[in-house]
Amino acid sequence: MATDIVIPNVGESVTEGVIAAWLKNDGDYVEQDDTLIELETDKITMEVPAPASGVLKRSASEGDTVEVGAVVGSIDESAEKPSGGSSESSKQDGESKKAEGAADDKDGESKSSTATAEKPKESDQDSKKSSKEEPKPSKTKGSPAPDASPASNGSAQGRSETKPKGDIKATPLAEKIAGQFNIDLSRVKPTGAGSRIREQDVLAYLQAHPDGDSDAPASAGASGPSRSTSVEKMSPMRQRIAQRLVEAQQTAAMLTTFNECDMTNVMALRKKYKEEFGEKHGVNLGFMSFFVAATCSALKAFPAVNSYIVEQDGKPALKGHDFCDVAIAVSSPKGLVVPVLRNAESMSFDEIEKAVKDYGTRAKNGKLELAEMQGGTFTITNGGIFGSLMSTPILNPPQSAILGMHAIKSRAVEDPDNPGQLALRPMMYLALSYDHRVVDGAGAVRFLVHIKDCIENPERLMLKI
Image: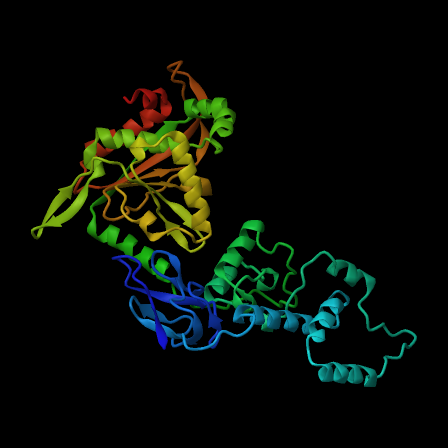
């Protein structure tokens, strides 16, 4: 009896995805709930498990676009499980191949002997005969020895064995990320079935080597500057991001208002309690918690900003919210994602910092769930972490406003304690993009000033004024 492998329903807004990788080979015996497929959608990359135990038969290939509910393969449950399991045998095959390929390397001699010891005695004897029949190289005066020089042996020590490019197995998504960050896949440790390099392996290597392959040799023999071009298919997530950004600009009456914020008091407060805060809560005290709290205070004071346009009986209507679901824009290797802090108005500073840190870590590893990125009544994006001094953020539909934070720079401004005199103060430009159909200009300006006042006088956050 064969059980179909069906693409599951991820969410209402997800209708299709791309098979980024098959993690099991055709004909492999798989156990129920083994991960078979990495499916990349316009929201997240998810794993599709095996619905039953048996022999796998694939009917779709890597890179295929499949709809939700489509059958991409089957599992023959009537097949008997091989002794030792298919995953173990495939792993042993991969190890024996590596050992055979490293037979000429001194460090690989022990692996080669171990791998060949498992073969029948006849093949072992044949290999011995063939090795005896090979003539020994004669040493001639002035000619180099066949072995590598001590210098080359020394440089090879302490470095992981490099596999030839032809033997590297990687998923299309892993190859794409490696290409974007100029990573040599031969340096990445594979964890997938059949020694296949998965997306997570490249991301883990990227976290351990943030500067990329800085020690990789430069390409030699380049006679002049390159003028090559390349065209590659956009990922479903990048397509979705492009669609939503264009949608926001074409449907909303978008406008941006700016202000500047003196960060002196917040920075002094953070410096004073940062160490004690970290010891008590196990997380660093950052600026995001202050801005989330200030935003929630402003959303309560100006509820129009916390609403957006919906359709009711064929006509536009405003949907308000008595809660503040604040989305935080987070950069990931596959694009910008916006996980949501639910009921942020009731969260403490340490809860906000822990949630933001968790979202950032899981976004880099591709582990965010779809439900965590749905909804949201307001968005905060911080271009300052990349050095942005000022920008006009684009709305996150259907929301009516988005706050842009930027880099902190010391500038000469009027000293608030000594009017008429200049002082060097740490300043940040703030930008609020809003939908003019929902929010009037005066309301948007007052909303941003409210945030500015809360940051410049953080005691307002404690007093809720």
